[in-house]
Image 1 (cartoon, rainbow, N blue to C red):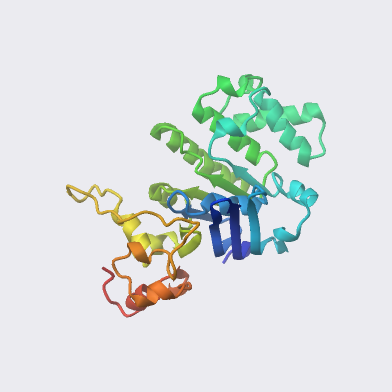
Image 2: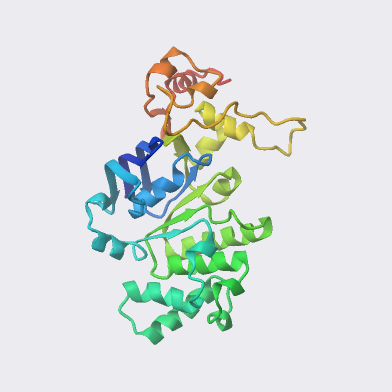
Length: 330
């Protein structure tokens, strides 16, 4: 069993706006072992990116604020660290690949200088040594060294994403957070970038949190999966367990909405309704207005995570009960 690298306990993050308080993340609990990959899955607005920014201590304040909780990384609570201490951790210990590579790169600096800047921030090397290491990193992610003096606009979308990955891995971080790293790329380039990330994760022995709403990507890359809905993790398990028998109604709805090559259907089933307004969340289970199994208990009580089988947790007492008793989950 891998020892725990990251342990998030009761994390709550709000955005205080003129329209009201946005409940972006509510009492979130999560664990990640050393060397593990965790797929963080959910609809847009579920709170995935906010959680990642919380780990990095990059929540924009105002309007965002970490209200409570702990983020234990290598035995230390990141929420107690000063900003100068966090600057040493970001990039060196925890690195993040952001969603849009174009907005992550400085348009007026050549890519070698941008990688070298990260290296010099965290390693005691000269400017020339840092530039040499930058060239090495570009070659590692599949970009020829001759292109190290080019500017971001001279690269394609896939190449820019490779540059961002090179920057993130330049200081050999222990934890890599990838926020939908293939969203803006076409399918062929997506596959190349994901294969590259798998190879580099093994090479650097890093743990990884992959934020996505593509269940296929999670199946290909991750060891464990956390399903998020309305600011809460509602199901958490290893990949095989979650994919073979999902327990929570929302998770089952996500899987049913994925096309199957084995079935010939005219129309895919969909989850009715929309994600709730984070300013005005429903009482009890946030999913109950869209759930075909909802009972009065769901409307009144906030469900806690319960173990359906070893290592497989779901925030739906009714479904967990049915699963344990071997009853059908409709």
